[in-house]
Amino acid sequence: MAYQKNLSRLQQQQPTVSAIYSRNDILPYLGRRPIKELDTFELVGCLNRIVDRGALTTAHKARQAINQICKYAKQTGRIKFNPANDMEGSIPPLNKSHMPAITKPAEFAELLVAIDEYKGTHIVRTALALAPLVFQRPGELCGMEWSELDLEAAIWTIPQQKKKERNQIEGDHVVPLSTQSVALLKDIQCLTGHGSRVFPNQRDHSRPIGTEALNKALRIMGFDTKTQHCTHGFRASARTMLDEQLHIRLEWIEQQLAHTVKDPLGRAYNRTKHLPERIEMMQRWADYLDRLKSQSLAGNVITADFKKV
Image (cartoon, rainbow, N blue to C red):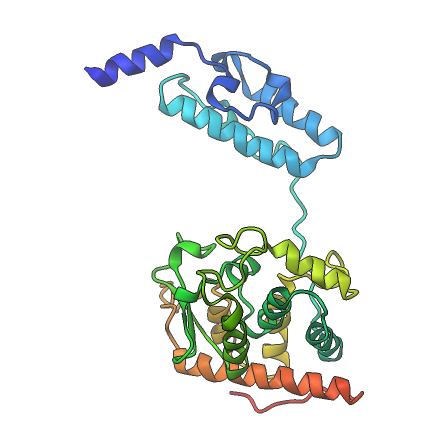
């Protein structure tokens, strides 16, 4: 009875879009129209007005917002049909662009040397130095906490809830740490080990540094983060060179990147699968990066066809 009374009250309110969704600044053309009066044709026209002014990304975000609004309205009995269901393909698709990344060994060696010589804060420099060694997502790297680290075992365990694909995987993501990674972390532990964050924000130590701080440092070093290399690009760099230079098995690389890897039966691999092999892979990768830096400093970077594992 209580449910029926609440449902009847909601239906009688004749709510507007802005009453349901407070961020009505994204949808200015709909104004305070009652949601029952909206149809697909009008919603498509709203989106195309945004497209016409060159804001394609905003148009796609607006389409998602409209669909959420109408879906909620249908679930709560405000409307019988969702007019946003038929908007698929009504606006041009977004062009998917890959994050810029350096994948040539000689150029990557110059980047590694530049990071070692970076004159900014020790926290940012350490995070940048660690990024190519672990090649996890920038947000996960910046948000690293001391409680996630076991430096004696050389393991970084990223909680499932922090992962981008947390709804598609089971369990936490295990990242083996090379001796070079452990050395970097032990060095900064004297500076930030008293708090929870490995890379705390300068103004608020309870919060981590942002990804933009790392990208800004790359720009200071002379690397264009829009066309040449960005912090997220370390993942593509590792993916490419582990395959082409070290000839590591792709499923090991994909698991280390926390990409969805399935067996022939379609089941997702356990995140700890092939852990001994991935431990060896991460150490080989770190040693390879050290060789690249040494060759760059000597003025002679070469690629090598390392024995396939």
